Length: 301
Image 1 (cartoon, rainbow, N blue to C red):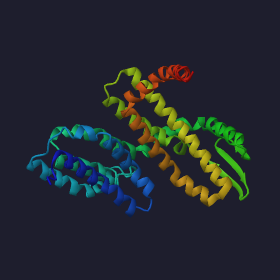
Image 2 (cartoon, helix red, strand yellow):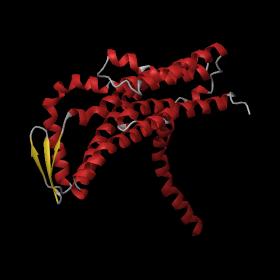
Image 3 (cartoon, one colour):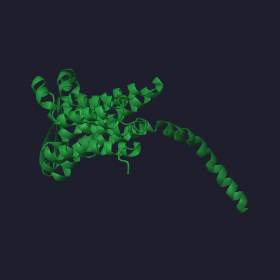
Image 4 (cartoon, rainbow, N blue to C red):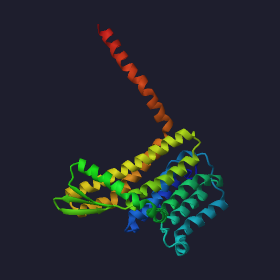
């Protein structure tokens, strides 16, 4: 079997690109934070699978260079962390360098253009906390509007909540009072990351501006709805199971929901022409339903 045939080369590339995510989960106790940015990049990388088959393999010199970069990627964060101590480079820039090394090992140099958006996304997502430190003073005066919205939704669902403005909701549960502090870092961080993804995705696409705008609106509204759903589920966990279970749900749920939505959105965007064709065919199919029933009744008569 030719391990470096176009088909096998792409398969091995993806296996090696995914492997560090398992290592990060295993070795990092705070793994949701450690794995989340590399996972964003890997999802975007998976969507480029089809285009990678068109690239030929690397020459020997390039392969050696790629091996050096891939092996050296495990040490990339050490000098950078001294220059940018607030950025979570550990496991993030390392993974980005590892992916670049893999591209050099498995594909011709022109394939690097396929790596730019996933690598940019990995690094940009790691800078999310730094960006939000800058945005939070601008957004914080408006947190009370979001708190009011969440209070209304929770009361509509029958929960006994008390709002302490500007940013605290207290829920009265059978297990006692549970106060929840809302900050823009908790509420909108996923929206910022999603905006980064949209910028990368839409810049690469040759779709008409109208199509890009529609999908950008769908993506942002979906992310906001997902955030509201996340908070509702967390409060339900507090209500039904108590503070400790609610905090566990709070810790993991956002990452699971957001990665699921991101994967679903990127898949739908990649299949948007098929989806649009299906939507356009709905009126035609609805129009034909009565006709078929009439024809069948005529045949029976």
